[in-house]
Length: 402
Image (cartoon, rainbow, N blue to C red; front, side, top):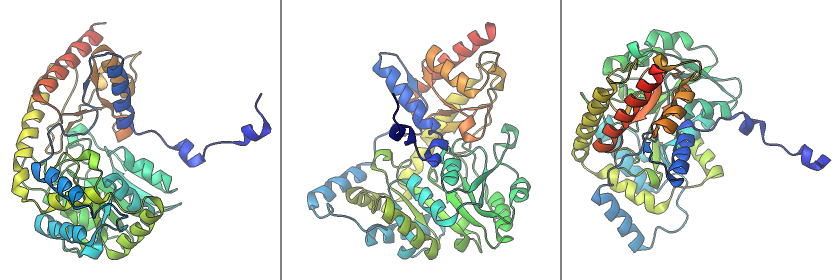
């Protein structure tokens, strides 16, 4: 029997309305099936398969041996780490931040959440070009603000025309969030496209930008560009980055921001009430990473470009699937609408079909704002990628035959 007290207990409506991360949900399902003895090729998580660079491991070992990084770190991060990040922003991105304009967080995800909480609230709107990283919209909703999604198609290279983004801006718009190179599409905004977008932002005095640049070292043609480096945009942009993707240090959970001092101070206030400072040993590793010669990362793009081409070639054998050619990151986002049937009505159904029938773990596109797609991460070995696309082709061919 349910007592009156028990019936009165309930979850927060904010949490009840929140959806679970699609990428983490699929990764967990993959682990469960593997534990049960199933042979699964996991292409769900954006987690590099290579080992971290030797200098990162050496920095961790030295920090542990020093014995002085075991106490509570400053909420914003150690001063010398923030100074190193500021120097990296200047060297690599043309962004002139002081250390007081830099903050270190427990991963780029927390860094983004800190900034969203600092800048928006109930009644505000946040424009998000779609497809987008799964957490952007949910983080916005958590604050009581409304995400305004601006959709695009494969034929548009998954980049909404700037005119379409401009049309979505209203007097209630406080923030624009995007990533380039993009998760989940791998699309990269050119300098001309960034300048066109900046011109729109500068027409709206109350509008700020979060530029998620976590994949900056994985660009297949040309160089990565930061919107904050465009004249007039430094004071209107919060630049987000971290050590997870380029340095294969996802488990160390270090992200960071550079931005206007007033935004960083507000983000510091948020972080101080949620987690305090990021792991002290991991911050020493982050310092070594941002101080490393960027030339050390050049081979990374060549590896992922080869893997991209391998996957795209293999997907040609999948009936009805259509792909663009991603310019960065390590994802392919095929349009899979041709595989929808009376039984498989959406990308979530299709992802589960491929997991159960082909033993391949992908992520459904609905959570990325691209409902006719699935996201394939090619941050794994050539052999596993070849096996995965062959399994996908076989399973989809069988689906179409029935």
